[in-house]
Length: 93
Image 1: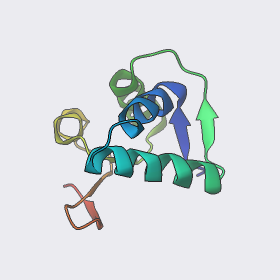
Image 2: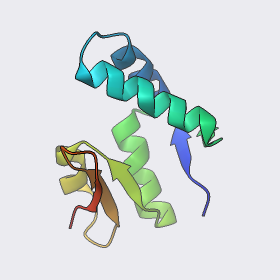
Image 3: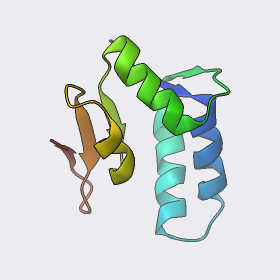
Image 4: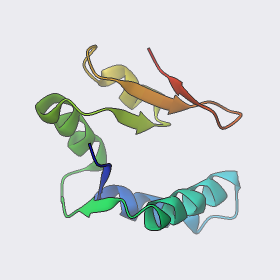
């Protein structure tokens, strides 16, 4: 399965990346990774969290997020990966 990301998520990352903080640097790094890896951007106008939930339910996709509240709201049978504070990708459940 090829990774995808919505335009709404790109917009959120772009806004966060303008901040002079650790979160801003992380958002910039995420945008660079998306570009370097050639991750397909879906033109979805839906609110990003709603889009992620829809993808997880309808397509059975794995979700990578740092949003703990979102991760908890996803169906139990969804594979959820979350970055730890030290930058490691771990299974949320």
